Amino acid sequence: MDRILFGDNQFFGVNHMSEEKARQQLIRFQPLDAILDVLQSALKAGVRGFSCTTHDRMADVAAAVRADPAKWDGFYFCPGMPYAHKYANAVTEHGYFDALKQVLPNEGVVGAIMRGGKALVTRDVETLITMLVDAEMKMFAGLPTPIVFLQNVVTDLVLGLGYYDAFRIFAEHVKTKYNAEAGFFTMNLPMLLPALESVGVTNPIVCANVNKVGFRMSGGIDGYRHALEQRPARVIAMSVLASGAIPAREAIEWVTGEPYVKSILFGASSAGNIRSTVELIHEYDAKRGAAAPQLERAG
Image (tube, rainbow, N blue to C red):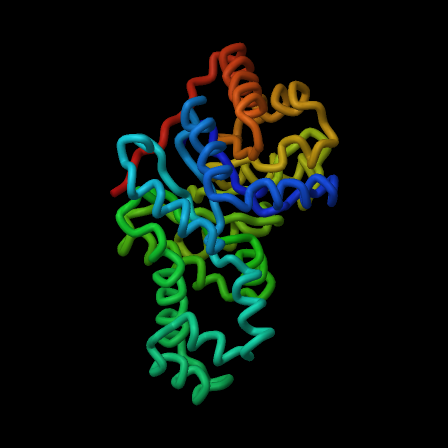
């Protein structure tokens, strides 16, 4: 995997420390060009991978990249799905099954689900999962998507329900259909790793909070270290600044020293902040003699 990935929270007004800053960012990034300018800054700083949700705005970003391949040479998407708010809004407005019909044009599948009720068979679940993935992936047609992520709202729900076969179905489908590796966002890395192993998903790509103060790290720092001693995984660290609680230099010095962290995912809204973060990661990697692992491009 590439050592550094860029995220999209800032484009949609997500800021865990300041509602006012979140509101300002949401307004600032209403124009598509504002988003594209920041992504160009990331690409010029050497950050090729963009980890994004399947928010409707990303369809416009994907279209812009598709329209000018020379300008975006080397840039790739790592979509994360589903975009939960989109489905929640559809369910609120139309109800569960009408919302499904909006997303899935194949009404035969929806009808089978309605008829099956509690007796829903595995084949129908598998069909539904793969069709939902395909619906979300349409906006990235023709673009490189070497990793396709399952968002934590679903990953952790599946963990709670204990239906681990859903992870296998997802991983196999993105590999077969999109020549991509499956990635999993989670808020519970220690619980996820054995669940994935139990259905044959080994050495997975897992994106989770990793930071010096253990902010939103289920089981804490020691829990992560122990879990990763037992089962290997390619960990992408997010929330490394603990939503602003840790100064950038201190945060990056610590996270680059965690040997299980293969990649670092961060978001920023200015070219200066992007450059400074990238430079800090390279600085501490160089001090440790770390070679920045590169992603083998799929597709």
